[in-house]
Image 1 (cartoon, rainbow, N blue to C red):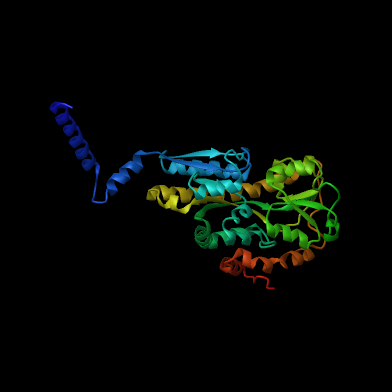
Image 2: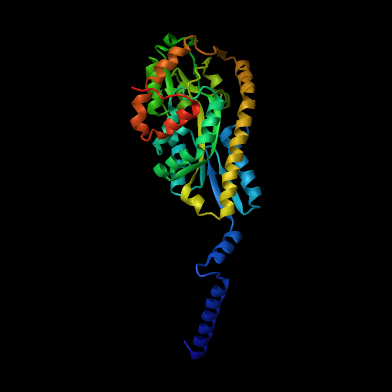
Length: 352
């Protein structure tokens, strides 16, 4: 290299150093970080397993979150929604959030409890008597739930969704008493607490993955399943199921989760916008679900389903189901959360 080129190279290098120094702020470069954060768009990939219907709580929450966070950040944050399991299963979505491959996902709480065992409290049968109890428990214990979830999995919930209580459907006969369950094969999620609950009712539970459920019902591999009314309607279970019993045993609960470290790494105003958008999605979901109840029931009746109401011997269903609670205290691990929930509800947990 000629001497002239060497001088030119030194001048360019010196100019670059001076430019970088000029962009820096204090000793730690905080002002520079702030400027980069302002200029660079933050992309949030948000995945869920449900479809794109506006009435589906997964999609409705995702759209509300997107609207809220993008408006609050004036476009600095872009939310990209990937519905219908485009990026994989619910459990994969949780893991992808842990690894910061995606930034947000919504999933059934029984799938989240695989990675955060303390969330298993939500799977305990007859934990909540009605929606209001669920809302109260979430609102009063949100931070404590997140603390445990973060310790166990690294993820935290920014929203809590519900879709009402799970009910029982089958294709064979009306179920009015526990005795009517005998001989029926009922699809349940791959979840030990839910499996044990149906065993306590002298029923034959068959754990089957969600994406295989409709075919299993259609091909008579199982006789029935349990899910909330809106899920039955949205997935057209009325095409393969006839009878409905309101067993009222478990709320359909879905947290929307993000990675705690990722959240804390965002600029303060973006963190605030994300947290507030989660609260907005939570409140929007509550209003939507209560509005949908009657509409869904009317649709199922119109499609020919026969609704039997609550079982005649509901107290016995409750007694048998709640007797399994102590079996899972060790599985849940830290029962402090359950104790707090029971305190919120003014009840005591069953003992062995």
